[in-house]
Each structure stands twice: as C-alpha cells, then as structure tokens.
Length: 312
Image 1 (cartoon, rainbow, N blue to C red):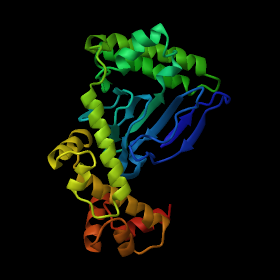
Image 2 (cartoon, rainbow, N blue to C red; image 1 turned 30 degrees about the vertical axis):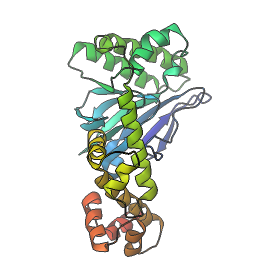
Image 3 (cartoon, rainbow, N blue to C red; image 1 turned 45 degrees about the vertical axis):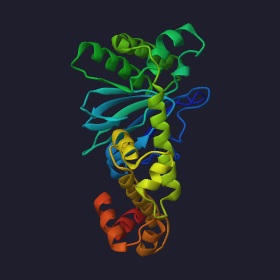
Image 4 (cartoon, one colour; image 1 turned 120 degrees about the vertical axis):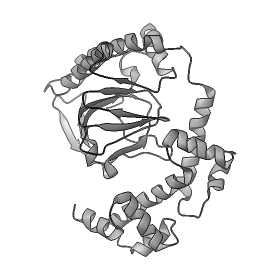
C-alpha cells in the first residue's frame, strides 16, 4: 500500500510503503488520515499487493473517493457488491463499512478526508450541501466515465489527485478543488437525496454487528458457537446469520474461522511455535483441519507460508 501523505508543514510529497490495513475490534480503521488541522490523506496503491489481494472490511468517520486507474476492483459496500472497471470511481459515505479486492493487479488512487476540512459544521454551506449527503441513506455512489453527469465528477476528482503531485504547498488548492468536487457530486446526487437521516434500524444493525465482531475477536481462542455469538446481542441464530450475510457476505462461523486463520498467520511469521501449537492457540483442536483450512484461505500450507514470509 503506497501512501502519499500531504503534511501542512512540508511542501514535498512523502511516500511510505505499506501492505496492510489495521482496524480495531469494531473494524474501524486505526490509522489517521492527515493531521488534526489538515484531515486529508491521498493514497496510491495496488490492491494486489495486499495480503489475499484485499483491503479488508473497515470503516471510518471520514468520506472516501476511489478512482480505478488500472484493472478491475471488486467492492463490497455495506450489504451490496459492485464491480468497478478501469476509469470508474466510487464515493463511500461516512461510517459505511466497505472492502476492496481484486483478482489481478488493480491500481487505485484514493483519498480519505473529513468533511469538516471543507467548511465548519455550523455553516450554511455544511447544512445545505454536505449534511444532506452525509446524513442520507446513500452508502456509496459509483461514477462511470461514459455518462456525462458522472464524468464531470470523475474529472473533478482527478484534478484533486493531480494537485497532490505538485512539489509545493497545495492545501489551499486541494480544499478549493474538493469544494468543486463536492458541488459537482451534490448536483448529480440531488435527485436521489431524500433528506432523511440514517434509520434507527440501520444504526442498530451496525451496532449489533460490531458487538458480535468484538465478541469473536476477544474469544476466538475458545470454542464458541453461533448461538454464543448471537446471544451477545440477544438475537436468534438465524437473525445473527442474516446480519453477517447482509453486511459482510459471510456467516459468523466463517468469519470466526477466517479470523483464527489470520491470527495464526501472524504467529507463523512472528514466533517459532510449532504448527500444532499455533493451531491450538488460535482455537483449532485438530491440526489437520487447521492445515486444510489454512491452505484454502492462503493457497499454501502453514509451513510454506512461514518460509515465504520469513524471507521477506
């Protein structure tokens, strides 16, 4: 993951190479974007470089814009799935859980920023033009280059990205271009805005999902069941299953197994414990079953995974 961060006190572009996204127990992204006085981050990355070729499930208070420069991106936004082709873009609203993955090299430009960077939340501009989108039921908006109204949004987005490569202070230009981008997007989305805030049911569902995820991540080493997971939010097993399938496109048990395997992968690289010991420490009581599921997820055995990553 190649970060190009714009710092208020530094005029040159700074690049850092990362290939992992870090989230907390609720799947909220841990890393900040920009700084407190300039909450803006611009990134240039190839999804193929991430483990499992996936920028995994996460959410943040900031809004996000992604442009597909090369390849095809498979995006999961809330309960929906979309295929983003080369040249297209997507807007992801605040607090919306999302994931990006690819089946081949897929280069994207993206930016994450706080809407408060543009204007004060108490201002007329914020109330009239930003809040209607931020508080709407719109989780995302996809823009295609072959549709006039949508192409204008993409053109405005690319101007913001282009400004980040300038070897000079570009904060004022960036904010100016972001305002233009937001105005263009607002004009396009206006007919879709219903003026209604997120429903209480939607907020309740997200809360329940986060509680269940938190429980899994805190108890994955124990033998827990679907019923245990569902009981954390006083739901039936079928209701818990429905929430996971609608929002994460998987089941609670599958999420549990995959989380165990990802924790095992970390132990394989960072410790010298045996495969059998790691299997037991991550909640697997049968080493053979652990190895089988590990190979299914990572396309290699635990020993091969350890050797490969210890050489990196």
